[in-house]
Length: 294
Image (tube, rainbow, N blue to C red; front, top):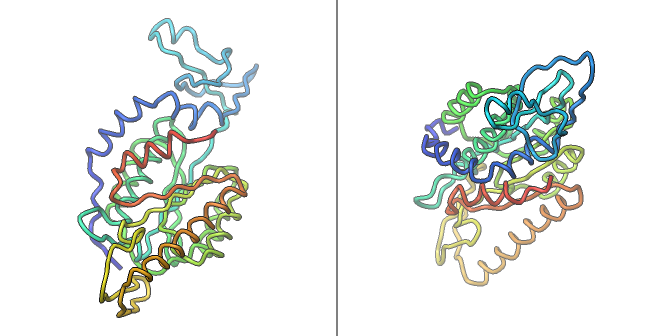
């Protein structure tokens, strides 16, 4: 297994703060307003406050707080229902691949996962980022900035290795989810399509997002001539000649594979996104968040 340190630049979160400010109204609606059910009434204790989001009941606004701050806040009661976010991050050996100066697939995927967790933390909701390869390393959902920082530190030193067993790992992880949740799976999804399909249907009752991360050399097979191909997960080596016909066949098979995943997601109402690691991380992140249909 690879035990190198995966760098998550602090500047990423500085920029994410600015990004969050720019799209705050949309992001807040996605992660809070439209998925909370506030039960107000006698006998319910106020346990805190949060920023008002479009869709919240006007009667829940604390007007005294508004008079002091000129900002809208709503009261949260004991019976507030929030959506826990479960992020499953592929840490198999294939995710350690990079075809050049771009970050590895795992480093890119980790930044996306950390970005999602950051947005959840901004609304003080619970999240967990769990890694999986041949087994799944389940972490318990918690909330708070301290937990986010501890999670990032853990991911920076996470070991990458092993084969991807997405079907078996989602079976195990599914048993750890006890209520309807937001489930985000970040992987290269270069596995048996039937296993991916099973994983998708397993989380069909949840809000589900799949994010595929590929290196640009995988998405376009940007090599030609005599080449040695190595399967990072099995170690199998293949000496072959990459012709234009072979590249066309590869592209056709990859598109077929991606379309199969996309079609399966559409059937269950899940969202599916594909990015290559040469795409600026904020372009990918903005594309995912701005298109949320909550």
